[in-house]
Image 1 (tube, rainbow, N blue to C red):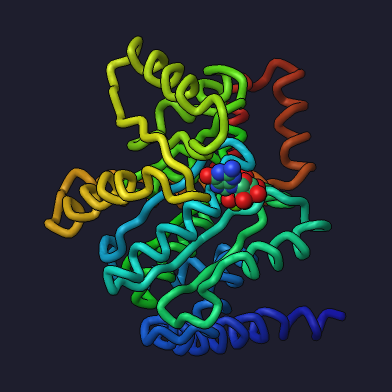
Image 2: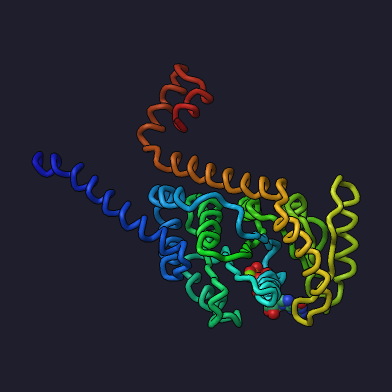
Length: 322
Ligand SMILES: Nc1nc2c(ncn2[C@@H]2O[C@H](COP(=O)(O)OP(=O)(O)OP(=O)(O)O)[C@@H](O)[C@H]2O)c(=O)[nH]1
Ligand SMILES: [Mg+2]
């Protein structure tokens, strides 16, 4: 037993060396645009944050790909719009990566992801890369993994990256913080303003889209969005479209493309905004991982000190997260 323990650190160190060598290969394969390597690297990012962060350090600075976040309540037509946007950017000759954050449970996830990928008409196009990431079953770190997946796609040479996330809760919405432009997609019949203000959707959008304009009630949805913003300092555009019939899509494309042109001309503020999102999400992931790694016994030890009046809650929390 003792002898085995003696050798264990050496084995571990060897393992790390091997991983580092294969990581170097993985990074250079990703940077050559190797799709299989990209898939492997994203899986690494999902499953092994520690190794992934060493890998990501070699990717160079972000800022080459234009990132569009697409969020909004379930079923508003985000994927259908993403599909339209893929067509648009492919038409401009740009390559497109898509990260779709799937809210389904790990159990039903497989089937849904399959459907989602079949749903797109871009399966044979090498200029398009689609990756789903399941958001359930994570003990935190979704935002980190999402922003890292985006950076990997960027390193692989994808020029536009579309990030679809269902805006149900604050954490789903926060994910889009890495974007240069954020579309919030609504639809008629969602009830009232509550949906928008609830999940932080009011703050996050650069463009508000009322999709399904072919259905009744789109105009009143536009009116309630506009009146919501009347009370605030912001007045983002509210556009009525139908991803199904194509109505209003041209206007939407123009609006998003203005942001892309600003990005392409080197707009400093836009770049800082996206980089800030990446740093914050990566840091959040690191803090969550550190907290998740805290042993029960350490937390309980600190709790005893608090109960016995030897330590304040604040000091205990500081020690716990150190
Ligand atoms: N009538 C109408 N239906 C639409 C429109 N756009 C999308 N849909 C339909 O709405 C349903 C949901 O569309 P999705 O694109 O999957 O919506 P989503 O927001 O991605 O859904 P989740 O990812 O599950 O939140 C599908 O049946 C679409 O065909 C539209 O403009 N008009
Ligand atoms: Mg969708």
